[in-house]
Image (cartoon, rainbow, N blue to C red):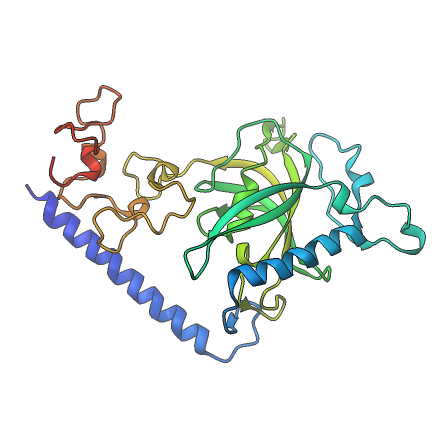
Length: 309
């Protein structure tokens, strides 16, 4: 009987924190700073037109450049090699262009006219890995290198760190799902190592990166290159409601902020009470413990998403 006031308090607390953080971000974005983390924006270009321009430049880049693929041929199980890209010229005229080695992965984006604009990412898997694949909702333990098409490195993490795929740029999270986690082994001295982890790189248009935003290292409308080493992962349940975050993407678009059943401003994957009926989602999902999602009134809408069940 005290649950509804508790949820009201928690949800309003969450909204207050979001507002507070938004004010901080707004303040920081308006301050004068020379940090690479400062983001500036330019006028928005039409998504479709911009994609055509960038895709052409990416293809031209891949046809005239190669990467150090020979260094990846004889990797040991617990090692990786840093991605290096160079121009096919001079002593490198016999190198195989990236264009001849990539596969294509397409993501549909919606433009300002509600038109679907397919965006191609081009990728190479150097080592697939030997475990499970993450989802776009999971946390991933990775090392990585980020570059622009002029081969400038804007971010490098040689030591693995945890990243939340829901908070990375779209293309990074999407590409990570094509890699598999590695195997973890313990050493006699108490340390551990990762073996046979996934390695690959992706080239993506700016709409899957920062688009019109820019930093000191990344210009507006810059296609990006990311090399990722995927060591391991954690399946996420951001709001601890018993439902994995990936399952709270109700419309299946791999975007989690636009699924908000009770329209309270808190997306389902961050909302402990998805339908706003005063009963925790975890207490409605499978109340009888039979392993099936409950639908008490048989209307096809699960109880945890139905505020009139």
